[in-house]
Length: 225
Image 1 (tube, helix red, strand yellow):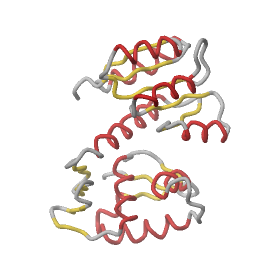
Image 2 (cartoon, one colour):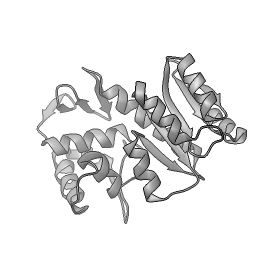
Image 3 (cartoon, one colour):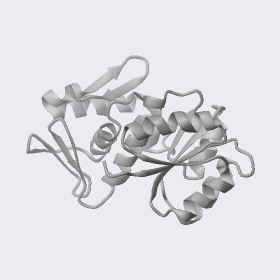
Image 4 (tube, helix red, strand yellow):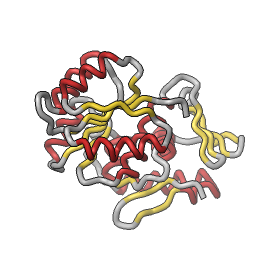
């Protein structure tokens, strides 16, 4: 991995070290800031930061303020960390352009997986970018899917669903999360819509459909065997 830079902003040094250690094991270069003002200084100094991990509650300038200021000039992915898990906080975060929202305490491995998923998703938006997973090839620019080199016809939502699964492979995804990301937040439908699409998608993928695992009572996980 080319040393991708990630800025970790938290007023707790132990938390910064924990996150830094896990990210550095994956080959990332980690920059740190102890409050919002320092975060903005680091952000403006270094134009190559690929992602921000922001704590909400910080002295001098909180995470929401940092997010607002960053979004005035940049679309860099942002993950918010918070000790509170209230829905209104989460909604505020997404309104401000937050890409992911993780409540403390959290598993550092899950955080790293979220970082990887977001970076894969961002890279996948580049023209001509092709995502491969276990013999499935997804060309997002051409809106084309191939299985072992043979093209497969998918509906628009099936394509979006498959892309989302592959970009988040290895992560347990709730039906609500899938609805929010594939059908968007303005969708007020039944979560069973997802089950119907997953059934059709599995069928079209043939043997590769087994990569989409059902997590009973929660949702799905895409995992290459």
